[in-house]
Length: 341
Ligand code: COA
View 1: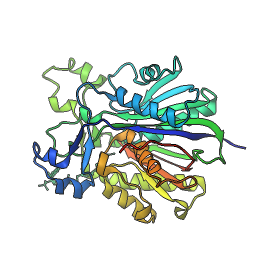
View 2 (view 1 turned 30 degrees about the vertical axis):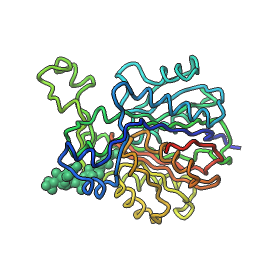
View 3 (view 1 turned 60 degrees about the vertical axis):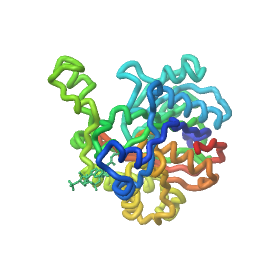
View 4 (view 1 turned 135 degrees about the vertical axis):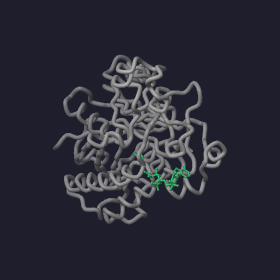
């Protein structure tokens, strides 16, 4: 029997502060009509003062551990592009606060494809014997890095965290992660970037707060149009590759769980794949784009309301800054999952 990483627990957390499109329209030159028709987003959750990525990760992690029945955990991995600070990683502190002691713990950064990259990384930790069970969390307080005065980006992003527990198991079991397709295109790194805050602008320009670093450079910059085109092309290609590796046809997919960047992107990918829209899962209307937290938060919603039933065949696909993308498949296991509503 072939070894695989098997999903045994799932949890999520959304910070309580909800910002509607109407709320945004009070301070930005935008409207509910523009935001919802262009993106599908109606509201998003945002951290308020005192809450950071670490706090969201701890809440989601605790719920995933409860869902898994509190197993012994050998490693904690956090995927985030909005860590509490540049150094050290968030994961060791999350492990400590969850009472997991001195286990292996580290962060990984892959923006909106962070959850799929992290699943593959966690599966690798299990395959190498570094850990038998892994708590993997996608957590983001990314709205803290978005310019609140930029109408092109401020409506799109939201904060939250989603977590899974994976254990060593058998490839034929429900919950076993299937083959992965992962890819990147660094030649298009500028399509979604935060220029300052890292080694390049900070050391070359004398540090934060210096006149040579424009304030906007500390915020996200996004070229929406080319990103949209790339998202459709790369997610479609990656999903097709993962299906091919798994030996699944499009007709085998009960649920397409795609990264929630824009409902129009998801529709276009579903159409390219030849997947009926009824099998395309959506929760972007309530949470916006939560980067690495997007897919586990969506899985949490689908599992908690009974949409995802044991045995359902799930295609997971993500695309994000880097550029980077990734996909995998799994048959849904029998999990007990708490609702976030
Ligand atoms: N409210 C009102 N008008 C807005 C606006 C807002 N929030 N944001 C932009 N506009 C305006 C623009 O200024 C532009 O006006 P103009 O025609 O007078 O110049 C017009 O709306 C169209 O802007 P454009 O950026 O071309 O819109 P779009 O149809 O491409 O939609 C996105 C913008 C961001 C929704 C879309 O490009 C997208 O989703 N891209 C992918 C983003 C993404 O996925 N990012 C994360 C990657 S994981």
